[in-house]
Image (tube, rainbow, N blue to C red; front, side, top):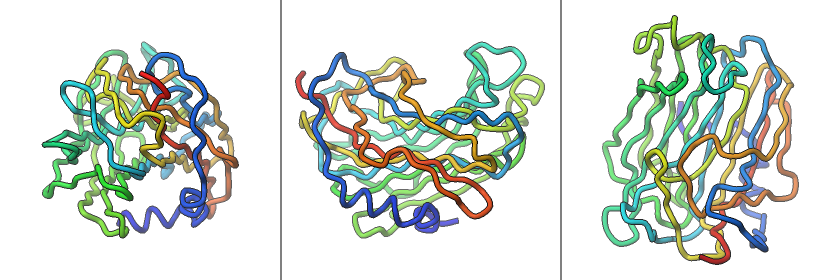
Length: 280
């Protein structure tokens, strides 16, 4: 599976929409957070194998950090099986993370990709990827994409890729990982379906805050997808599922979110611009 195949599979409407949409700066903002946070919801309660979630973020312009560590991550968080935090009988969430570290100046280099299943407060990583090449994502038109396919109740397929402004892959990796072998299926599983998905750009570790500049600007264009066997999807603005934060705000354009058929399955999409706050 190649990243260009995945991008095309969502249909040309997403790519075209990203190119034509003119962002509108937010009028007023409260405290730093990824807010509003537009998420995809699913009311499905059946096994949804071969379903997948995807997050793509395209750099609109170079940026710089004001934080100490100069770390941030693209996080794709999915609540699983309709669980609530601390549920004792089912898995809580699956988190896909693409970590970025600043090497020098305005460079924002791909550092790693990982997936992890969180059950209550326990969430060992079970799927890792360290890139063979360094890709500076802080260049206009560079795309970071991650996708997680639910293969069965105990295994996922994790894909991550970085493409340059010409659409050529700089780095790409696809692997299948079994979480049951890492945690034991009796405590972490089975995973049968996604019930809530978000995509955020936040700090790299728990409770870490990252601030981007320039202010009052669109730094990223992005979208999240959920493809399901069941047409039970909708969306809502929710609080972020992760404790990390940033000064990016999701501005949803006209026609967002939207749903369409995807072969024998269903595709639900939320497209947003990632804007910095209007004032410090």
